[in-house]
Amino acid sequence: MHLQLGEVSTIVVSSPEVAKDVLKTYDAIFAQRPHQIGAEIMCYGSTDIATAPYGGYWKQLRRICSQELLSNTRVRSFRSIREAEVLNLVRFIETNTGSCVNLSEKLACMTSVIIARTAFGEKCKDQKEFISLIKKLVKVSQRLAIFDLFPSRKWLHVISGKTPRLEKLHKKYDVIIGNIITEAEKNIGEVEVNSLLSVLLNLKNQGALEYPLTIDNIKAVMLDMFAAGTDTSSAVIEWAMSEMLENPKVMNTAREEVRRVCGSKGYMNEESLEELKYLKAVIKETLRLHTPGPLLLPRECRESCEVKGYTIPAGTKVMVNAWAIGRDPDYWNDPDKFYPERFMNSQIDYKGSHHEFIPFGAGRRMCPGMSFGTNIIELCLAQLLYYFNWELPNGNKENLEMTEALGAFSRRKTDLVLVPISYNPLPISSNLKF
Image (cartoon, rainbow, N blue to C red; front, side, top):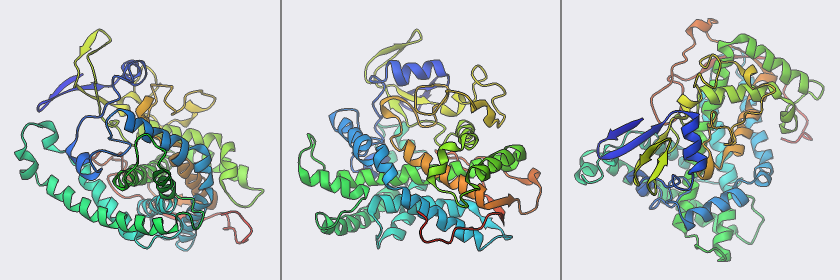
């Protein structure tokens, strides 16, 4: 579908066949990001992973992400942080059993702390202020930027009011992240610190990169980690819980599986996750119906290209509608139904090779934090189901709000407030690996 959005010629891709062409067959041609004023301001000239122009610098950042920051080995090394923070959430819930708990609020807090600890290390005095600022930044950046639709009208930058707000937030971010980096630099070489920031600082100081990393580059990458990871992971957990409450049979099946697999041990940790086949199917079905970013980050055609008989000129903006693709009736039976069983004994996954299911994108610009986020989602859901039964405050599922809020990310319109009922006792042994 072609749209003329202001001065910007835009193609919207809503079918798996065309998505495959854009994200695989002609991936290199569509790997560019369109220029956006918000990214230019907040991401230090678009030098982050998500919005950097396609080229040598971006390719280097991508390698750093896949081999250093978010490799499977690195993600596994943060296991103790995930388990500790999920257990902290469970302990809070345990103290409030029988009472209403704002799960949305607590999940957002948990994911923010997990990302902060993995990004900065165990201790960061500016952590709370930093997380609060990121939330404000994400909220402002999600609003439609009218000046990006009329790039030649420079005066729109001023009258829209968004540019001054972003510049103000950017200055605050720069001060806080600058203080955090200064503290981290003092520890480089003195103690072994397993944090994403320490990895980037070490790479910068070694001076062996083709494109030397600057402090501003590192600040931009750190912003990506928080802006992309905090809302998305917590929102998927919220939607999974919402859908299971809406579909009690699914809730019972997932709960029984978790308790059967972990029952003999008396506690839940990441070692048990691989056995939870049905829970993984629940998560896949949640990602299908509630894709974290319904419209994947926009791409731009780098050169004229023919797709399905149509010529797409260079400079055309391309939006991939992952939400519509995940509900395409040609690929999904009863597409609007929440039915995790469709993924049982199925080879379809979200790693970018099945273009009817692309919640994390596909190709060169695929989300590099996929495994980091899914590990948090799986562990948290498993623990919520293992330790508690869950009820709605009024006990009537017909009053469960399932409306999505407007915005770049798929979130519930209202917070998910539930009543937890204790089922399994929490672990008390200090020898357990949490």
